[in-house]
Length: 376
Image (tube, rainbow, N blue to C red):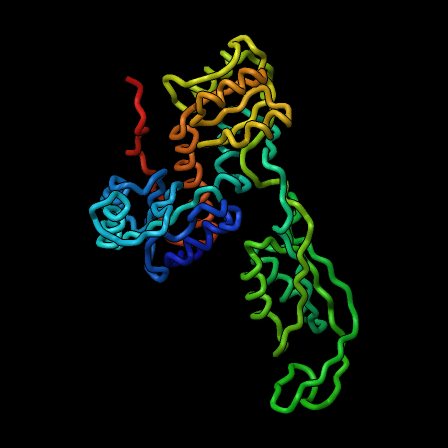
């Protein structure tokens, strides 16, 4: 059995960024590190929906050095830090107890195998696709020339960074042989040849696709594996669109049911005693769109893609009127219920990832959170 490794905060953030890349977050969002020392040792993580005072207390009780929350602790720039306001009080307690806080918010909402996938799967929605239109700019082509005999080492180093994924395929690359020329000036230490003399050598041109979130790591690992003193490489922005990420999800139920039956299924799946809905209870539902949290911004897109029903939260009165007028069913399952599922699901994926990387870190699911809105 391989020996487990000690992890620091920077290691955990790196793993989290692979699960839900920060470049997927909304511009207004504040994901990632909220407070903490990147070099701090981490052996216990508490996963929660909100980094409130009770989360700090739970982390302290379990001996966790890190809290990973969905909602960011710091949303707006802080002009002063005092314990007289809610955010300041939590920050004070976190710092005093040496507890770091990291948030995965709209990047987790948009991520492949992220919150909206989990919500759709929980509700029995199949053949899931993102509601949000795919955008360009997520991928680059990395091209580098390597002396013959070193191409496998460099290629493997690049692919290990997260490069080379195309849909359900991994380790995707292309290579071809050619002739490279160069001349090093006096004072250089060329891997091949002599300073001041023109050299001609056989090289292998390597190409692969790299997601923007893995670009820095891919280049860093390429440099470490490449034998040349100066590495020539190309980065080419690609028009490829990621079809596996985006806000919301849409798919279909295994069989067509009434809105009343589907609403009962939602209540059971999310452990709700009640919910709000719009539409005729006997309306037939098959094509279902979901968006965890406040998701009515996806209503028009859901209608355009043929959704019979949108499951989300925080539906306003006039939004409900519009949906009724357009003949689209809505289910408001509440902000807490549609997002709280991330605690168990993210914890599961963190455990798997930490185990694969052989990090000696325990992941704890916070169970003490509750919906601040109660039915009276």
